[in-house]
Length: 481
Image 1: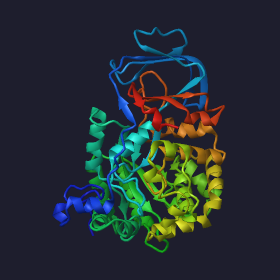
Image 2: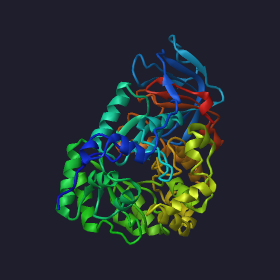
Image 3: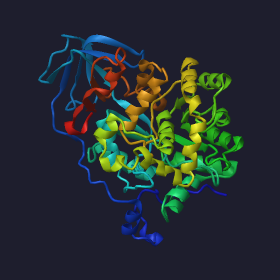
Image 4: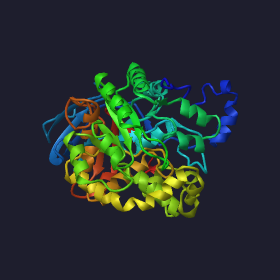
């Protein structure tokens, strides 16, 4: 069986008329469009000099005091200078008093799906990539990794972002997913998406059933110029097929030969062991415990992990009827999105085919999550920060801050979290890096926070300014925590 290639991205309306459904009908099936003003904007501006500020060194995890940081988007998108306070002349730049503040690299969300809708299946809204991107940027996320979507559509979106036609984070992306017949996310897509979107979603993925079709899928992805492949190895729902060792091995081998990186979605320890040679495991093991021997193997091969623990916690809470919005949720998102998720309203997830059973099953596994996070950190696994947003209860922008708090609640040091949110994420896609650190010559994607987050972890949420490629992003103060 040859690898199935996309007919169309499941969240796009282009081509739906050919499927016998009008755009109007599909919009109605997916719910109303969000009519919410953007939070972020940008104006022409000169350079910026942040004086006498502390700087988080994302390579070492330390904070250094009494530094000046100078950049000017009219000169270029990179940081011009970082040096001792008083050594850098203003050169006509806007001067910011950095006392009592810390400059961080802009956050990297290492697991998103930019084209997906933000609404829950029982209260859907029409997909809006612009809404997702705006929320991510408002939350201080200056780069996102899209780990599964049509490369042509994501590529067009990335061009808009880099040209300034659309305001949002830098978007790095691969192509659609590699999975096997009747494996995740096919059952969930068929159950949740209205016709014909469930069919279109299935046809947008590479569905492989042997080594030959796996080779074909990797070759097709490589032809798009994607930097990575993403494979699914997870028995979701329980009892469904999962990718075999032979097929995954073929994907990983061909991915390396093509000069790409490999991303593998895993569910339990056996999945993680199969994917130990991947460059990145999307999700930590969320079903069952993870033994130290497996963690040692992951660490030894420098396989990075994006835990997305808040996404699992959120699903479990929805099923229990205990989901509640965070301060960031309430600031960035309208009540119309939050109300269907809060308390007993969110328990409607139980009635959603496939997803409901998954959410309820998580209560049998959540007791392992803190220990899994702690053990991975203690044994040297590099943890990145990502959210898998948007998902029910996992909203763009705010979920990132919720993930930081959830990782911190498992006693992961804030310095480690911030390194995973910046430098380590950048290293996943490139070396030497061009972003992810506050250094001259690197892209001026920066955050100015009040306080020192290494000493006071909550300071990570007190973002006073966001800079994207050297330009200050104006954020509507009424839409911030």
